Each structure stands twice: as C-alpha cells, then as structure tokens.
Amino acid sequence: MPRGPWLLLLLAGALFLALPEPQAPPKAPSLRALLPYPPPKREALVALHLKNKASLHLLLGKEAARAYDRLLRLELMNQAAGKRSAYEDGEKALQDARKWILALGQAVRGKPLSLEGLPTAPWHVLPHQQALRAAGYALRIPPGVLAAIVDNEQYGGDKALGLSRGVREAADGLALGLSELQGEAPLSRTLGLAQMSWEDALKQEERLRLFGAWDPARPFPKTEAEARRALEDPYLNLLFTASRLRGYFNALLGLPKEDTRPLEDPWLYYLGPAWHNYPLRAQNLETWEDSFHGFFKGLLYSVVLEGRWRVEGRRLYPLKAWGPGLASGGKGRPALLP
Image (cartoon, rainbow, N blue to C red; front, side):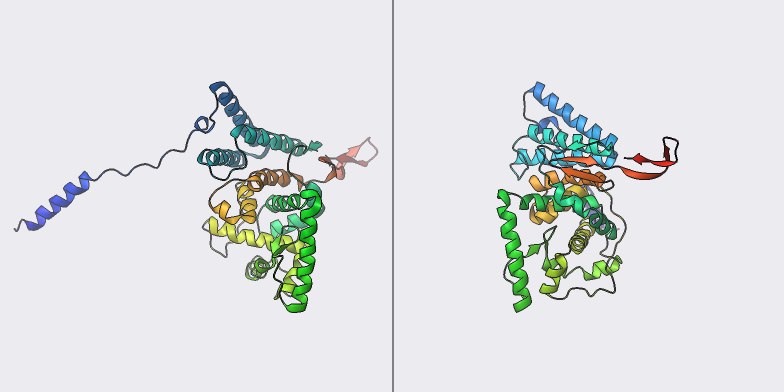
C-alpha cells in the first residue's frame, strides 16, 4: 500500500494536536473590582448593592433583581471604561438606585410614596394610565416600558423653565400646518406624549394589523399630515410607539417579525427607554440618565399603573376604591380597599 496518504493523515493529526486550545472568554470583572474605593467603603457599597438586589427580589421577583444587577454592573463597567454612563462614580449610582427601590417598596405596599430627588414627572403619565395599559397589552409588552418613555420625554420637556416644551410645541404646530398646506414640513420630526416620529408611525400598519391592535373601521394614516394628526391623540401616539418597540424587541431577541407572544423580561425596562431615546447608545450598551432612570421608572410604573393614585407635588397617594365582597361595620356596606 502506498505510504503517501498515511503520512499525510499522520501529519494532519500531529498539527491538530499541536494547535493551541481555544481561549475561554474573559470573565466579567467582579463587583469589587468595579468599585475603586478603600476597602471599608468598597465593602459598604457592595453591601448596599446586595441589599438593593434582595429588596427587588422580595418586591418583584428574581428576574427583576437580576435585571437590576445587570444594569448596575453595566453602569459601573461603563464608568471604568470611560464610556457614556449616568454617573461619574458608583457610589452615587447605588444611592440613587436605593431611592428608587424605596419608592417602589411603598408603591407595592399601597402606601404614599415620595419621589423627592428622583428625575420623574408622574403628573404627565398618570392621566394616561388607561391608554398606557391598553397600548402595552395590545402589543404584548409591559405598559411600564411605555410609561417610562413618556416620563423621560415629558420630564425632559419640563426642563429650562418650560422653554424646551414651549419651543417644541410651537414647532409641532407649525409643522402640522405646513404638512397640511404643502404636504410636508422640514422640521419637528417627533411629537406627542412619547415623542414618536411621524415617519415611523407610517411604518407600523402591518404590525398593528398582525396584532389585531388597529381598528379596522379606522383608515390608517397615509400622509405626513394624517400621521401628525393621529400622533396628537395620546392613545394612538402610545400605540404607534408600542408597535415600534415591539419590532425592536423581536429583532433583538431573535424572534420572527410576526411573533406575537407576550414579552415580560424586566430587562425590557432598560432596553425600551434606552433605544427609544438614543438607539446608537443603546446598541453600544451605554448607560445615561434616560436609560438608567428609565429602568427604575419602568419597574415603578409596572406597579403604579395597576392601581389608582393622586399626585400632589412630588408625592403619590393611593386612592381608595369601593370593593365588592367585604362588609364594613356589619351594615352590609362595602369596605374601602386600597
């Protein structure tokens, strides 16, 4: 038998055995490595992080706690790498996370809660509670994601003593008039509660019909002027926003475009506000004010939207509702339930 083929096989085997073993991916830095403080302070911050995580586990479950842990580590890694981050140091990030979690705990218990020191504007969100729930459920995404986006956009509009909001609303009105007269307007691309762009609104017809979320008796917008008028309706603004988000979530999670299953992962509370606010930063897994606080707003609104609350300044108070099935005072009158 010729020896040529055998020699080639032996040589190939020797080369295969000589190849270096594939390197395991580098381990993510430990939490302590991401907190560059003297040991006593570092350990106190680690304890605070674990306390936050345990609190969220008790309040909203394991997945919410895991999402929080992921966000904090991402924020700390971005700080260490010099990438865009919400804070300059980890201590402030952990302290503000604690403020959000304390407020969330009060909401879960149905107690009055203070939002002092937190960048949020619930007075813009809660009047649209029913529309937020309807739009979120129509596209099978958590309504809290939409509420966080509305809060981010409206809180930003309140800045600069109302100048930002006034300029934006004036531009919206001018753009609507131009689009009706000329068919298009060279300004004001986004508008409404969630600052949804009219161009993106026009692209949502197929998905909204797939989810059965569009009233078949209502003509779908076909022009810029029609899209702008639709986006001035709070519910339609939220519905278009939810549809756009659902398309992003399906693509990110590797789901088919036509997938309509409910999405419930708490990490969506980071992804939704981040991507809506700044898609390129979200794609780069950066953290900044709207994405960091948006996560906690989403968690908080996931609870608040299921109840009834009154806003007074920077405090929320639970409203009492008549509940069937419980008597009070033995006179057959329904009791007040939180």
